Image 1 (cartoon, rainbow, N blue to C red):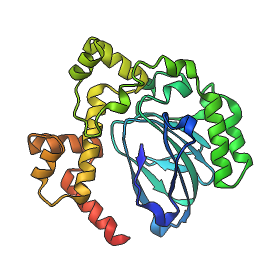
Image 2: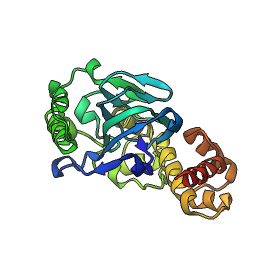
Image 3: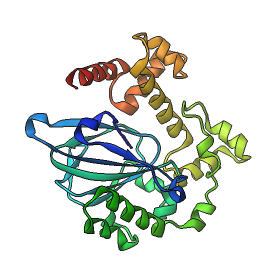
Image 4: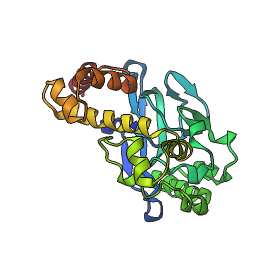
Length: 268
């Protein structure tokens, strides 16, 4: 999931991975702040098709209204927008994997993690992730996280990933179908769906809808008020289908989402 990127006033920052991990890790993020009760707010966590890991160094993080006490959480691929409630002392680092990348680190069919948040302590993983808590500086923590990821990475599994060349080539606009991919891969549509469920945790149709709605969200930030034009530019041929998909993923209609953006901008 992608956290909204307007939180710089709360100390929210992005970091690039080292060269060895760049094909698999999209970025790292860090946030450190104190949020009082009067400033308590929910931040959107929009799905992108990928998975992630969150290391928490402060008060329990609240995802979708539920507090999580675990210091390290594996976040599976999601089909719908979630929320992160910032409360109390906040100090966390996140790893954002590209779609299809997390399987090589955790050796789990990602379909089993769809929409889930799991404590890393519940998984049979390389234990050096605990060394992250032995240092305090952000750059030192990131170094420890990268060392853990490199130890955890199974390069042989990644080499067998049948989607490794395909996934980076898929359009961000979500303009692809299962039939298109089956033809490209010279496989049956059911075979393609099984591969996507195992390696991505989503079907091609689910991933396409997530990307199309993600593209629409970006358009809503800058496009004129005409939602019909926004729907067309996002690849929808009718506004009803656009509104249905958008609400299924984000939980709001496009108009409600745009209004929330305006309210947030006024507060900042």
